[in-house]
Amino acid sequence: MGTNRDLLFLSGDLFLPKSVRSFLEIYHLGNDRSLVYINNWSLLHGLSGVLVAWALNTPYWVGFLIHSVWELWQLLVRNTPWSLRGVIDIGVDTGFFMLGMVGFSRLLTDKTHE
Image (cartoon, rainbow, N blue to C red; front, side, top):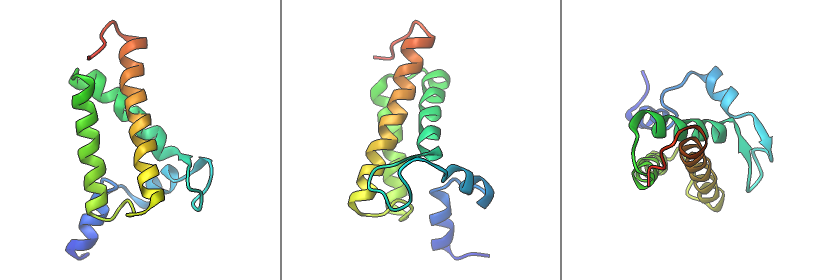
């Protein structure tokens, strides 16, 4: 059994199995040394924005708040590094999340969640 620190760190990846994490770490733009990159994690953030817009039917600011709390948790458990790359990663992930939330709301429904 892992230590509490290991469990906290793994919670930042939702306790996903290594095979799933490996799939999510496939890069489409940049690589593991790039300052800016897009990988399957980025696309998953977009999908989570779609799910929040669809399932929770919340205003945009609530979706942004939910996502921001998640990103803060990842910083606190050191799943996202405290670095320039980490800050950019949070910005890209948040952008994809909001794109998913706003895009789904505006393109696929008649709701705007404003």
